[in-house]
Amino acid sequence: MRRLLILASTVFALWLGASVSPAEELGADSESPKQRPNVLLLCVDDLRPELACFGKPYIQSPNIDALAASGTAFRRHYVQAPTCGASRYSLLTGRYGPASNNALFQRSKVLEENPDGVPPSMPAWFRRHGYTTVSVGKVSHHPGGRGGADWDDDSQPEMPQSWDRHLMPVGPWQHPRGAMHGLAHGEIRRDAKQMDVFQSVEGDDAIYPDGLTTQRAIEQLDQLASTNESPFFLAVGIIRPHLPFGAPAKYMQPYVDADLPEIDHPSKPEGKTTWHGSGEFMKYNRWQRNPNDDAEFATEVRKHYAACVSYADAQVGRILTRLKESGADENTIVVLWGDHGWHLGEHAIWGKHALFEESLRSPLIIRRPQTQAKPPTNGAKTDAIVETIDLFPTLCQLAGLETPSFADGKSLIPLLDNPDAAGHPAISYRPNAKTIRSDRYRLVVHNDGYLELYDHHSPEGETKNVASSNPQVAKELQQKLSERLGSQAVAEGKLAPGLN
Image 1 (cartoon, rainbow, N blue to C red):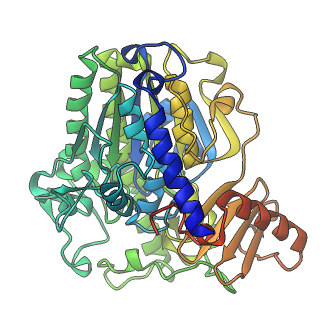
Image 2: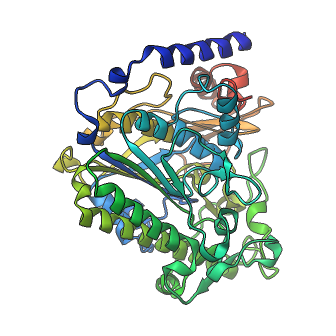
């Protein structure tokens, strides 16, 4: 059966590539490519909804707040996977995919072997429809979108046929791998135990890698906005607040004496869950301190995370300011997307990788261009549940492009028009389990069949497993999960035909 499914998928992809004419590829309407709106996609790593516009007033995030005030903030947006590579796979393909960080490189390998057997990525789709596509920074899993020992090998593209230019300035960090976990003034992570888990150093934005990424992004924006030959799809990836938490001292200053809210449900959960020991965090130099039993240290960690959020916010501000100065903002769709959440002590986790709310919920903001904007919905907030794969069909519809049939998501245009409209359950996964989030419940299904069910209308939230007392709810959600993901092989995280 599985072989038949894979064969059918491949035949369909071949038929699609052979049957769509150049004229049809330009979309359902007659609008020429250069008249279509541009797309500016801002990807921020490890960004939980820890922003003033998402209800955290102690956070200094004026630029993202301003974007939310001119667009729509999706306050219950969920990613497909609590890890960078798998989450970005879903963003950039519009499809459920493998659960590993290597998902896009797996896709690249299959694409190399069978170019017609893999549906085009989102940037490739826009490129086919006349867009100039450029990525700067960490948009796919590797900053700059290349493989190799130092992530700079041009012969190993992470996303073939997707970008006209994929760029990653590295400065004193020598290569993209060095910049990914770089601290101030070119410090590269060689042995994580020898690298501080957080840092705050005097200097301008360029003493950390994101300052260079932002400057290169602005240069690309200037170049793209100055030509009327084609619309652009510019994706910019900001690394902070990814570990280690390093930001210029000026961004730490507002938090030195700040009072932080208490950590919700900070204890390690009982029973079987997707809890883990925060290995990514714990491997850094922590001065022999553990935030789970050292409240003062936990507060220090949270403040340094907040400083990184403010640093990332400043980079967003620089890019949006230049977009406005260029005049291109009037005809540019702007999206800000966090690739997943991040636990700051909830469930005694410091990191991502779990199938809890804190790992899976991240910010999503969409601002339509002025030519499409509807003032009543500017500054709107919606609590409808949506997921990352919804961005592909949404951007196609906003840009006037044909929406590809292979995309798994649903357009968010109804929510942009009416924030009170209904959303839909969100699917997420990791290698050993998968989950579905409905308006009230979260169901987690482990590969061995064990169930976790959490009631978000209960004060206990995701600390009390109510699966045994609500078998009918668990059964119904498990059925919806199976319907969305398909066969058991697909449901266990092997989600993209031909990539297993």
